[in-house]
Length: 407
Image 1 (spheres, one colour):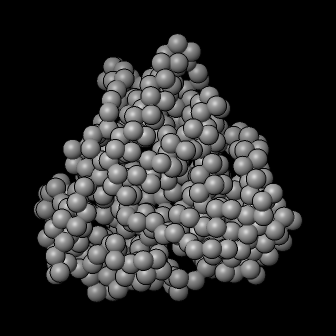
Image 2 (tube, rainbow, N blue to C red):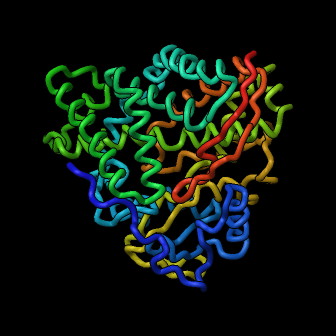
């Protein structure tokens, strides 16, 4: 199963001077967030001609309502901007119910609290090992090194991959992400095909040697019997191919953005080291402030009017989670890190509704472990060079050189 031509090859196609905003105009996350603040105030349903044209919902209430209404806002036409409308539709992200349901049920089965908790000791070992080279060198790119390598081990443990694949997955997924952002279709296809091969090998092995369905996503997918029939193998492979990369995109950006914040607020670093029990609440506030997504999308199943704008079927509608989580109507003083925020867990960093991130429990655990190890083993985290910012569909810091002083 080969990836069809990569992301929209002409991101400027259709751009009109009269459009409401240009998602690529800002040079930094701060500038992008300022632009979203202006849109929330004056144009909450905004239109851009970039990437073939799309709408952006920027207010919390609108984003939450759309994410929670899978009948009106469907995922089977466009699930992310930029994307290729001729591309493959991999379950569960690109499916609507009821087709979506067995894939999501199979994955959810492997992410229950008890199973995730059992992964913690091994994940902590991986985090400590992958952080050690940066500490020994006195620093490095915390996003592209630790932030990319540790998530590969998280994915390896969840999927029960051969441990020898983890380093290759880290490199392959990172190359795929960079190619996707830069619209390099040749590298997108090459790296995607390698991950498809990993997924095929995984399915082949589990057919011969199935594992408990509560412990193994491939075995769980193979055991599903919607309407008494097994899932099609190509769709199982597609779902696992999606699993291989979905946990590799956000963690480097989130970890990089958190380290930038901690570098600018040394007093917070000291507080979290002295009181590690504050880390779960701190992580929720970091997730709110540094949500790495602005391009997850839906299309509407019929014409609707939102804030005076007519949205038609087939037109992508992005749910700008990064903007929604800075909406002052829900989060007073939204640009401030506030450990005492009463609704600290009300953010939309993991989405909402049927397509909310299936891996939420694992993502929270792995990010907490990464922060605990960083703060425990480094007495200071300081940005030491230029920060590279993400482009659509993400927002945040994708490359963050830091100095780490060993504790």
